[in-house]
Amino acid sequence: MIYRIFFISTLFISSLLLTQCSQPPASSQACDPGDPKNTTYMWRDKNRCEGISKNIPASGGIRLISLTTRAITSFDEKLQLQIPKFNNSNPDMSVRSLAKRYQLDNILFKREASAFTFSWSTYVLKKENITPESLRALASFLEGSQAVFVPVSLGKSSGEYEFVLYSNSAVEISTFQIRRNGKSVYTSPSRTSQGGEIIFKWKPDKAPKGRYELKYVAELQQFGKSPEKPGEKLILFEHNPAWLQ
Image (cartoon, rainbow, N blue to C red; front, side, top):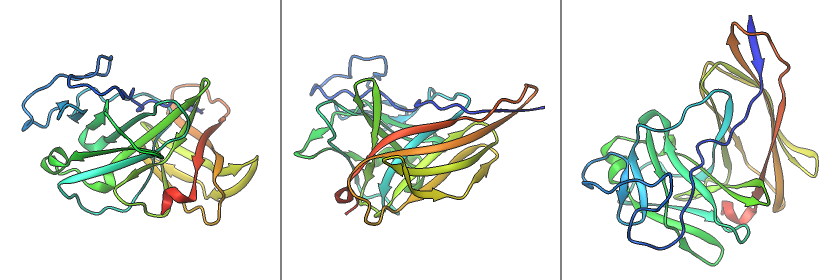
C-alpha cells in the first residue's frame, strides 16, 4: 500500500550570529576550533563554522533546501556570497553540499548598505573536491512569525533563480508554481524523483520586485501505510530584478 502525504520543513536553515567576535558563537550550532588544515567542521578564521559534518540533519517529507542565483563553474581562492537586506532582522542562512556533507553556517557577515556579504577561503571546498554546482544555500528573514526567503547570490548571478527541493523518499511534484497576488506567473511541468534533490529554475523576465509565493504540491510515497490526500505548501519569498544583475 502506498502512503501519500505532503509535508514541508525548513530544516537545513542554521541560526546566524551577526555579533562581531573572535570566539565561536555561543549557540547550539556553535563549533569548536581546530587544525585549519583539517577539513572537519570547525570554527575557522574567527568568522564561521565550516567543514565536513557528521550532523547534517535528515528527516522525512519534502523540503526546500536552496534558493540561489549563481554562475560559477570553478573556485578561485575566495568565494563570496551575498544576501539582500530585507527588513531590520538578521537572516537565518546556511550553505551545504549534501553529497559531501559539507556545511557552512554561523557566519559573521559584513553589513553593506543593501546586503549582507561574506567572503571565505575555498580550501575545504577544493580539498574535498566539492563542485560549485553542488552547493545549496538558503536564507530567510522573520516577518513576525513568518519566514520570508530571499535568494543567496553565490559568486556571480546567473540571471535566474534556482529552487531545490529535497526528499529522502520517492516523490512526485505535481504542482510547482510561482505566484504573485494570487495569480500564477510561472508553472513548471510535474517532476518525479526516486529520492534526493529536485531542481527547478525560474527566470523572472519583467517580473516586478516584491513578494511572491512558491506553491507546490507533492506526493511522498512510502509503503505499509494508508494513503492520505496530498497537500499544498506556500512559501513566501522576495524578488528584485536588481539581485539578478
